Length: 351
Image (cartoon, rainbow, N blue to C red; front, side, top):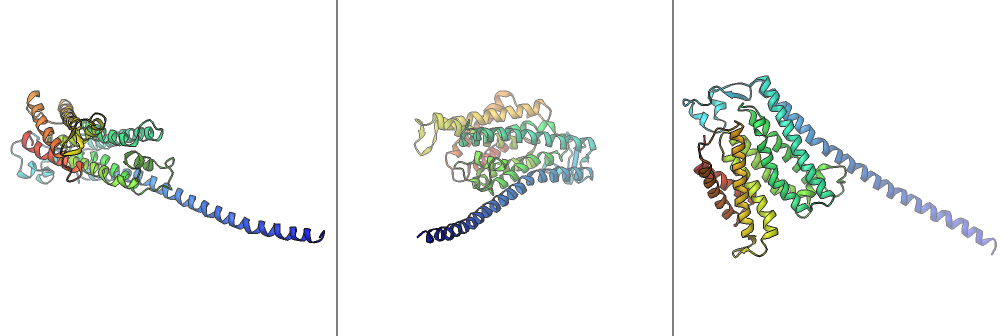
């Protein structure tokens, strides 16, 4: 017995140890490799937005200096402009523009960078509020929805009067779209501590699913890009459509959830009278405020309407849009701004 015990002990313990150690090492190796791959993926994704910003800003600057972007109108008040000049981008084909000057390129590129920095700081403030628990994701999503577009339009006077300035301004919503694509392709293995895009996805999604970034929020920035490139500061159509989509629809959700529990519409229980009223009030306030700001700063020509007349027209546009929002046949980020643009084209003076 004295001889067998040591033999049994000597044989069994090393064998058990020898079998368990390789398994633990293999498991640790697999986890380490997975971690390295996740870090590598996150690192590559984090470089996409800065590279896109550099390419967009640099490319447009070279295009402007090489006269591929139109500068200022030769005579913006002329009544003898060709027919093409009355259409969006028409002046590009009409020969009615001066070349872009280096000073205008510097101003527009600088304005785009400053606006982009402000937009990034605002979104970062919202995502940090979600991360620390001060704001729930749904509220952060609607705060970003309500304020992003108006703050962007607020910065339009920083750009020059060159026709190509709209292209520089569109860099901001374009890069927002890139961030949403990156955020929508994120997964749970990527740490929110190492990826601002993951934080963004968590802040703007209803359920925490990153893929939601490619839904309504992506449509939102596409509307911003379209309004900037097509309408810009030439007429109020783009401004009203963006303000209605952002201020109106955003406040409708924020205030409707808080004050609309007891006043639901009979034909749509997911909508409330309080929410509809907030949409009207937010749309009118946002549209009027932005139009006033742009005309006072000289970025947009005066509409030639009295304050009362303008408010009444904006009220009519907002009321119809609130009615459209009650019937969500398609995404609100499409139906609301399209309705606002159509009505603005009819009710407001345009160029």
